[in-house]
Image (cartoon, rainbow, N blue to C red; front, side):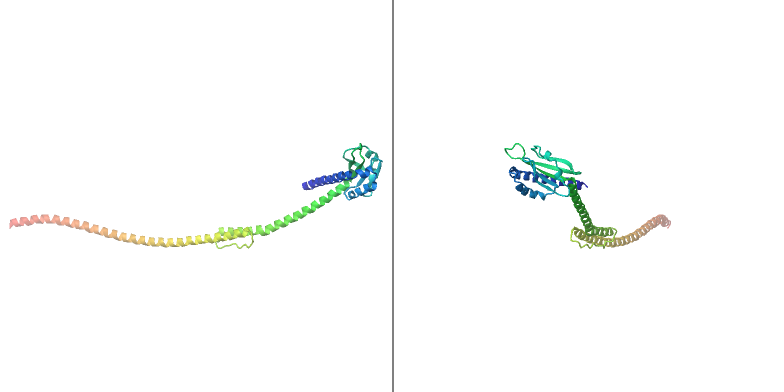
Length: 286
């Protein structure tokens, strides 16, 4: 709607610029033929203006107070209802005004036709455009805007569908692959054959998955090797503990034997002393 308003405003402005351009150029060309009352030449100059988008065009001779040229479009006698006495006033400047003719609204543009050395205008070029004609023109613009909007909407819809089919769908597929990989399915791979960055992303995912699998395999092999080493070290440790227990047992036995030897030696010493005394006394007795 905003675009429609701007285009309508632009169209009205451009239409007025066209009228001003044609009117100013035509009024300059009409100076000599109107001064000479050469109405045939006036008609020749006015002929290109007939093709313009207006409702009536009148060239008024201000010297003779006659209409030098008149052209009407449509069935209404528009120009005939103009009050020529109003045109006969000595207006030396361009005039634009809104008026009602035969029950219809018009915008009228009046261009004075002046000449150097003449105090009052030689005549007037009058162009009138009806509100209905302008409305019809704007409705045509509105229809074109609506058609353009529909085409734009269809194009946008097709573009979104194309993007969804070519970009969003592969991305969703890749996201599912990544999610499955994250859940522990390390054998999953992405096979996207598009010719854009999504395929590059898919290939990079596959490269990453291969490297992660290599790391996982390396970790598993290291874990198995470590487990074997732990088992071997455990066996060695158990054997060392058994050997240590055996040595400890032997040490205990040696200590017991040593203690027994000490006891036996002590007993023998205690026995030897009285025996030695007895032996000495027996010798004395002998």
